[in-house]
Image 1: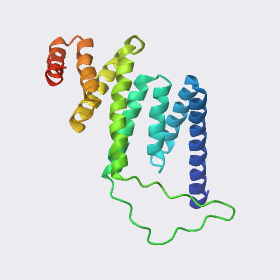
Image 2 (image 1 turned 45 degrees about the vertical axis):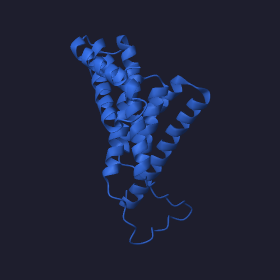
Image 3 (image 1 turned 180 degrees about the vertical axis):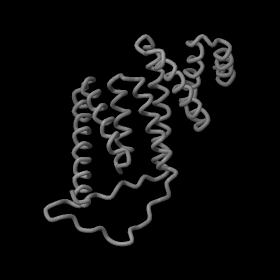
Length: 212
């Protein structure tokens, strides 16, 4: 297949996969269908295996995380929100796109032109990151509430993921109202693991900081 035709087919396949996955999530939200949210999340995960570098990939990572959370797959949701966080950090580190040196080539006859990739400003990326970090803590905390459903490895990963996201939230957003809940869940993760010295230290610090 000629390279130009191969690229065209690849873009067309990406658009179909993205559209079908998004429609599944929309239908799940309309019907509050947990199973359909799970299927939508699986579709998003498969999309990212093939199109991780596509312009829409960050939006798909967000949709994947939201679908896992809505499907009550909290451990997988926590991991997916960490994927959102990493994606935001990469986008924030990228230089702004340079203006095109020439207008784009017209599409083949009978076809629509590809829309330009969305350009995200720093403020909206930061808002996405803050929400993803906080929701990652919530997701891992919900997973740990159902710890008998987790394997030993998943239990360790959920605790580590909660603590990792909690530390980042505490350090990055010290004035946010959610600090209390994040710090409480951080300390509780040590208590539930039986690490009582660490739990006592963090609970005591929490009480000292918020005495009423």
